[in-house]
Amino acid sequence: MAVTRTFSIIKPDATRRNLTGGVTKMLEEAGLRVVASKRIHMTREQAEGFYAVHKERPFFGELCDFMISGPVVVQVLEGEDAVKRNRDVMGATNPADAAEGTIRKTYAESIEANTVHGSDSEENAKIEIDYFFKPEEIVG
Ligand code: ADP
Ligand code: MG
Image 1 (tube, rainbow, N blue to C red):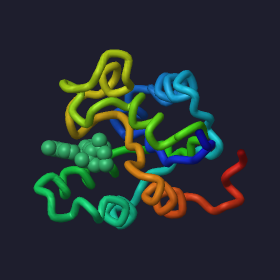
Image 2: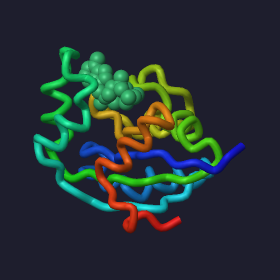
Image 3: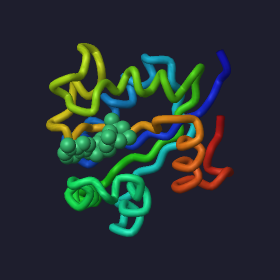
Image 4: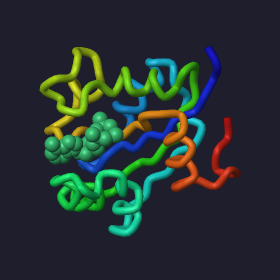
């Protein structure tokens, strides 16, 4: 299996509860390596651009409000089959459906405030990494 990269966000519900380390530990224990990381407070324009694929969904406005309600930590993760590996450790979107031992089962507050974002494909991972990071900010 090839070593690949994916994009992760530790969402405002997690930074508010001081869970940056806890979430990162679970990512690392799942075999992912943090090769870029920065704490930012997204602008509304950044959040709307990032989630543009969801703009027709009824929760789009609230989702953007939530994502700018506090700081987030954007990260590039590297590992074997990184996209799937990260989705597996994240767990289901709704924490009520998430498996034991996943980040969302452990930490998420609700279907919206669900602690982490993770790219859903290699193609989107590249787009999302480019959205937040310059190449020189990623050190593998
Ligand atoms: P995932 O983050 O698991 O890939 P989606 O891409 O479907 O899930 O949704 C993006 C984000 O939108 C979710 O992580 C969550 O924060 C929010 N979201 C998804 N579904 C709902 C919903 N029904 N109500 C409110 N927020 C939602
Ligand atoms: Mg998604």
